[in-house]
Amino acid sequence: MSSYQTFTDVELADLFKTGDRTAFTVIYQRYWKKIFIIACKRIGDAHVAEEIVQEIFLNFWRKRHSFVITTGFQNYFAIAVKFEILDLMRKKANADAYEKEMASSFSEADDSTLRDIDLME
Image (cartoon, rainbow, N blue to C red):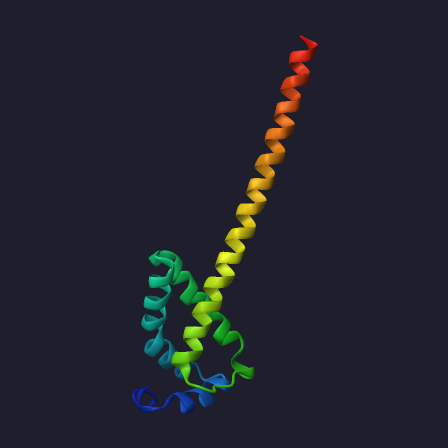
């Protein structure tokens, strides 16, 4: 593994594309902290940033056979962080909207039931 440490991003990418786990490990060790810091600064929550990093590397491994490096891992991971955060924000907005809609529906139904009971009394 020590020889892998001297490989360039392009060399590591070529090995990674073939499923080389050592190449993946070296890429992970080289970039996880940088990705974590970027995510943490943008999100402001270390636990969520950890999940983002984990998701990025999980997707990275899943797509290894079709992976093509164009500008280097630094740019690739910076863009991956951006899109993971946008996806997270979209999911949160959808969940908040759904929760608000459910709360609104529940309170309307609740009010009508109370009015019916009051009317019956």
